[in-house]
Image (cartoon, rainbow, N blue to C red; front, side):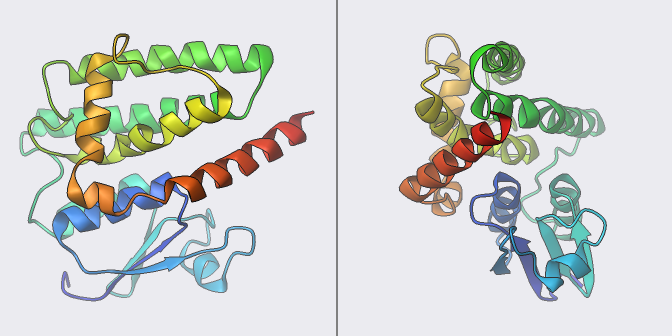
Length: 223
């Protein structure tokens, strides 16, 4: 079954879809990528993810697997080479715990910084700094969340390393500095320097333009 065709339904500016590409690249898995227009969702996407109607969706062996964290675990269990999750049961559980923390906390807080102004933005900024501080402690003494090599949690958190500087640049805010967050700052550089990570990053100018327009729409919708 592992040799059957693999297809990923994604969107070029989606951090969640990029997670899946990183995992596939890390594993050395050949796959077909289909970029979806989320403003005009295809019948293919609606068929393969009828519950949430969102990307990413992995298609493999005639089956559809939605939700990025679920897909990452599926990939790790299906293709055994270059394991993402630790072998030790406790460490595996902790990797899952912190992945859930990132998706339930950082995934909502950082967009709150990006999509608000004034008092609401300041509240989101304070919360984001607190949550990033928690991740900082998880990195102390380590090159990657996975230790000396990239692991499951690095791939889950990887979008922060690339997207956060755009958030700071567009909003004019400073969230992570080399002095205030030395471990995170070092991890940003280390993770984005991994060849297969760097290879898949969205073009910076294109992403900045996309995010700027997206922020303007968010602010207009709240005014």
